[in-house]
Amino acid sequence: MRHSHLLFFVATTISSQRPIMSLAAAGRVVSFTTSSSTSWPQMERPSNDDDGHQSSSSSAVPAIMNYVSAETTEMSTRRDLGGGDSTLVGVIWEPKQVNVHNARLSATEMTLDKNGFELQRSGEDVVGKFQEIDFCSQDDVVDSYYPICEKMVENSLKGSTSTPTITCVCAFDHNVRSNDHSSVGEIKASSQMTNDVGTAVPQVQNPAGIVHADYTSISGPRRLGDLSQPPKLNDVLRPKLLSQKRSSLLDPSIVQEALDGKRRYAFINIWRSIDQDNPVKDNHLACIDSQTVDKSELRTFKIHYADRVGENYFACPSSPSNEKQHSWCYYPDMTIEEALFIKQWDSRGNIADGGSERSTFAIHSAFLDPTAPKNAPPRKSIEVRCIVIWDKE
Image 1 (cartoon, helix red, strand yellow):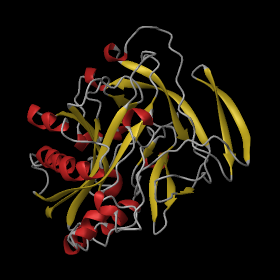
Image 2: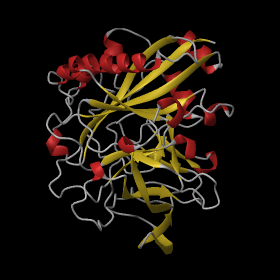
Image 3: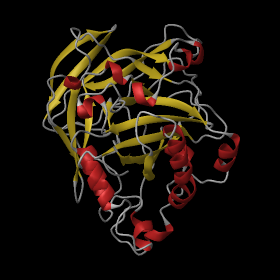
């Protein structure tokens, strides 16, 4: 939909594609392709050798994750104002079958600070408000749901004694996703867009079935800087900021102090099912424990917008020689009462500054569950992105 956030429109054709090799992996053949131009890969479902064995009671389920190969260098695409991507350049896909562990059964609780993600449950007072929010309405989400997410992040982080107190938490972007767009309906553009011809109508997105992280060492600081400038064409808050005659979302002086290293800052996503009646049974969101990721496994993906360039990280599989191997985790049967916090960039994280054990981000991907019932309801979810800036250190 916007910004450096990874969005997927699975193409139906592949141009100039040349197969270079294939191999057997985890009992299946994986094909590698390289090209000057290629399409987004489809998500694949592993075979289920234990029919009827539900994921909620399993310690792990198999999944096929769309990695890129270690030979991949720099990749790019062009994104239109509605969030659609063109074909990709420079990608060599390497799908790999992995085990995704049930984090509900983990002996150790996953935390945002250490692992890059954590699960939180909302109180009844908060959940009750969801019945009054139209998650397909830009105005409803911005006016009613953004403040809820900001408060959740603030409450989650303010108990930490390892950093100064928080200066601000601001939600600034979101995506609605479903594997069945008709089950969600169309996104209702902001009523304030009428006089802003530069703003495009957003779209419901597909679950993002690529192993990726939303920011890089370049795009994280750059995105923070953008939030202290006049809103870009793809910014969801653009209509509201323009109508309020505000020049930017964040105070430029505070942002500059963060960019100069005088303040810690972090981007955090709040991922939630918006299905009022059903838990998530398929198209789950899984994260890699950040303690099992090596910087050498990251590859830069550039997104060319109309007025700027964003970046994500794609990831290649762990080398067999690496001491650390990727540990995938997910929470089966997530309901609307639960929220998955996912760190997208932390300026005081281990990869960001090289001298901390704190996580910088959690690499993540959607996946198809082989234990899902055949009549599983479509996944319907929303993710809201927040920026957090702490006081001076």
